[in-house]
Image (spheres, rainbow, N blue to C red):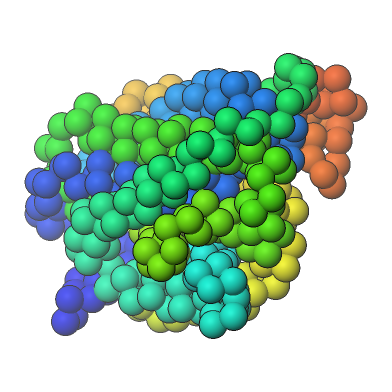
Length: 464
């Protein structure tokens, strides 16, 4: 397949051959992940801890730090697989889930990534609307503008995406710093709440983990063009710091903003009109026209996360069914943009409720996926990347791949304990009533434990 045409990447999800993995600018991995995380998205997530869960700023900050530190590890590790195999993350997952069962993961990942695209578009659109209190641009028009600009970046592919993310974090970070400086004196006006209970800690911690773990399903999507001899530790470290550092700082800032918003009249008014983006805009109102200009920059800072996520969505569309590999990746860029615009306009009408419902669903399958894929790679393949690449055609040949019964069986069976441990708006299991949400922990551990005997059985019966 033609790799590029006029600067646009056409390869899609097919593995990148060894000789075409030539990128040696490993520092780009840090700037990519940092830019994707340096925007109002983690600020919005942090606000959930103090505003929705009723947790104090101190407790929220500790929960954010602890759960982010641990849940970023698998993302950083799996990102290092891209240079070794040249495979996108869910293409490599065929080596545990099989050629056809992996389509179920792709479907779940499509829903997850599309959900994040919707959230990004709503935040960016509401920020544009907040510039003039919705009198010039309403949230709907703002959503369309943000989505179309992201389309332009994701349409071009890997090289343009990395080039954009290399520099875009600078104008993305500046408005957040300015907003904090303008409204910083109000952050001390925290709502007084009792110390967090164990259920609150685990439930909000699960929400934080749900923000981080889904990145694992697309981690290597951004590293497949790196040189095969790329230093593993450097790639992992750049990914880890680039993702965790801004997430911890900005989520904590969001928790501080959320804890003060009910006590600051102008912030609460902004929140009621444009949710988190409205609060950030209200923080900058004292700066007058300059504050409005910075709010525009704040809206456009969502492009880094949204365009990278859209890029992965286009790859996942191809991976959903083998026949879709024949359709150029760029066609799916247009499709996902249309879907995101339509859904985001509706989601904006009740943003925080939809955000919590969305987050409550994505962490569980992501944790099960990580548990199974890591167990297969470490226990059964002994971290031998040759088992993926020695036969160049194995990734697309069902006869050379595992049938996937063990992986899909472990993923399904682990939910026998996950479901009772879920605590969400739409469902609270009997275990979670006492412990809080432990669903993602159960999914991660149980899927790994169940996969081992099921995989041994699969090997014995099927011989592959």
